[in-house]
Length: 234
Image (cartoon, rainbow, N blue to C red; front, side):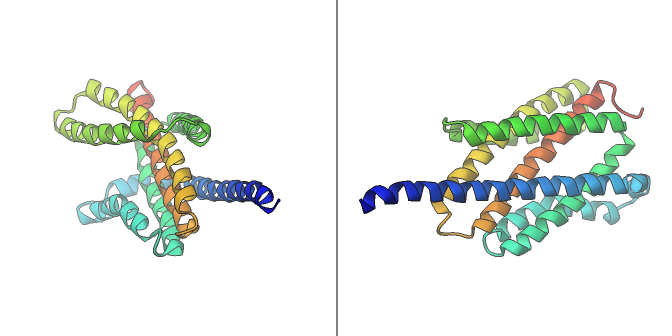
């Protein structure tokens, strides 16, 4: 009788814990996106002044923008609270960077890119949450494709081929859409496997960071696609 009662209770407790974890992870990710959006909106009037920065004044915040995610990820399991603060600091920095895009793209284009990114993200995160298929293989392939794409994009920075830029952006959207589903499923599995051994708060911060990066990259690539088709300020 005791064994019969124990199994359903364990299953329910696991489901409740997983739901709480996923809610926390998506909640922090969504809050970070909101912070970036508000920061970008507030800093847009100053974007022209920021674009006039020279030398170290411009490169220092950009370097911080690239390095900070690695620092946050490294601290997430050791100092979850510090990592959570770092996530929102990074969201503010990202908002400042995005405000510079207002000099190139129209408000309508940026809004369309944001809404499209949100639609893709929600769809793929839903797939990652509810699918029974193991996405590990396709996620690993997407990660490899991303590395190759970054190399190709760096090369095209020197060649400056518009068609190549358009193709790369479409490919990037597909890659980050796949990564959104994979990262969602991966964090679920990590919670179920290690949730009783590590800080679930740190795990949620790490997941929120990964999903936030997926969303931001979706937005930036869609913004470039819409811009190529005439949605800029030129």
